[in-house]
Image (cartoon, rainbow, N blue to C red; front, side, top):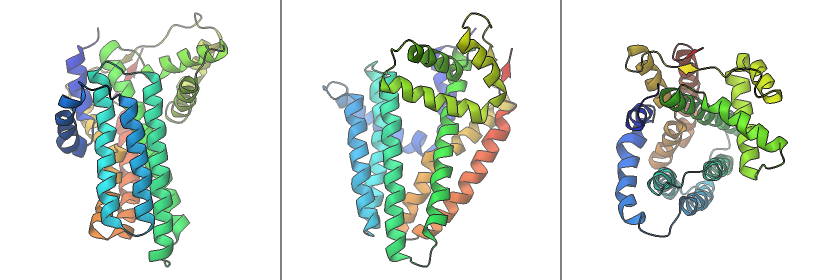
Amino acid sequence: MGLSTPKVDSFLERAEDPLNRFYRYPICHRILIPLKKTPITPNHITVLHTLISLIAASFLSEGHLFIAFVLYEVRLLLDGLDGALAREKQASSLNGRMLNIFGNFVAFVGLMAGSTFYLSSAHPDVPVLNTVVPIGLLVVAMAGIHDFYGRKVRSALASEKDEVVEQLLETSGLIHEGKASWAVQLAYVIDWIQLSILAPKAMPQIMVRMRKPNSVKGTRLIIEDPSGYRFGRFLNMLAALGSDNALFILHLGMLTGFYVTALRVTLLYGAVAIAAAVLFAQSAFKTE
């Protein structure tokens, strides 16, 4: 028996990073009041914050760090607004989720490209590739792991199902039937990568269910004590894992002018956050 939607949402809120919970989301909800009565869609917001990110990357590459900081913070606000608007207008969809993921990816590639050009010109003594590439991989990993466990938490609390597994099976069926859109195919790839890396022991049963959907009963994903200390600790680790935390460290580097230091701090922070979240996730869920 799953929890009610408000209770699930309250747990998921605890898994959001503090800056989103206490700073960006309250602003988004204020903007949402007039916006929900307009014809503007969540996808419009997603496209807008993607374009802003590319403009910000251009300013960063030229060394205009303060302007880049302002634009990147506006982008993060809009990144929260598109999801809030989708929920308010009941317009959430797989296409919208995949478009948002693609937009975030474009934004991050732009950030890394801007960082590369900036470091090459302003800090020629810094090994660019050895700095930018590890950070890029680390932040992408943070975003993917946070998304993976966030979806598992939501579905386990709401229905005792594993949303990641169920969506992979659904998208796999659509692909085999020749009915897959670009969003379905992208979702399939993302889910496959996440499960292969973070839940490899589950893959053999998933493969069987793909070939013979009715031959193997799906497993229940259970959180035994959602209000307990162990699960609360995991939610705290998940909140720390949010990639927006790492991005904000970089943004602070732009604001203060200590961008090289911010890059190094981000690398250390990301490694610790990933290790802690994956470690505590082992005791957060139970399958039957």
